[in-house]
Amino acid sequence: MSRYRPPQPPSNHYITPSGHARLKEELDYLWRVKRPQVTQTVSEAAALGDRSENAEYIYGKKQLREIDRRVRYLRKRLDKLVVVDQLPSDINKVYFGAWIQLENEAGEAFTYRIVGPDEFDLKQGLISMDAPLARALLGKQLDDEVVVNTPEGEQTYWIINVWYPQQE
Image 1 (cartoon, rainbow, N blue to C red):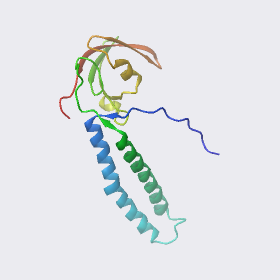
Image 2 (image 1 turned 180 degrees about the vertical axis):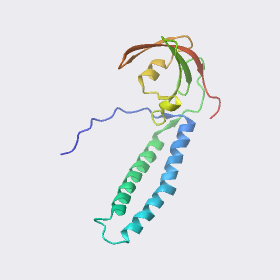
Image 3 (image 1 turned 90 degrees about the horizontal axis):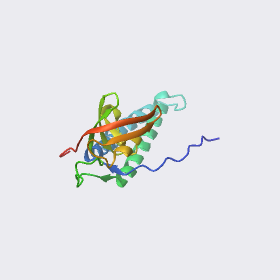
Image 4 (image 1 turned 120 degrees about the vertical axis):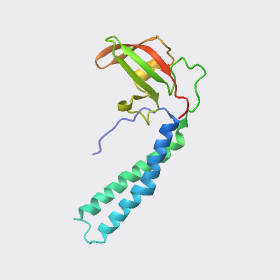
């Protein structure tokens, strides 16, 4: 019996130029460097004989499947992505690619950048445009109040700064 997983909602196909370059680098690394290394390891392990109890062979084959799965995903995804490399007409409003500085009710400041779902990283302050906070921010401008429903309850933020990177 297989485990049912409901289909994921479709994600946006937008990406920044730097995010697109990172995905292409990952694909290139997996295909040109990592896969040949693992293939070599598997072929050496296979030459040792009995494959049914050969842990290196079994692990290597599993690693190859994971690499092939990721390569297949990246190739399909890179074909669909739309690189957003132009500034919006109104740079005082929050759109895709904007850096936003927010302040909450406690006076704490947060800085985020709205990016595509393939490149979000909270440690670097990159949030997906599909995230509830990003959806609430899109189209707003400086000094606007933004209310976001979170698991902890309603959170209120004020936009204290908006800027766009000039060139990536």
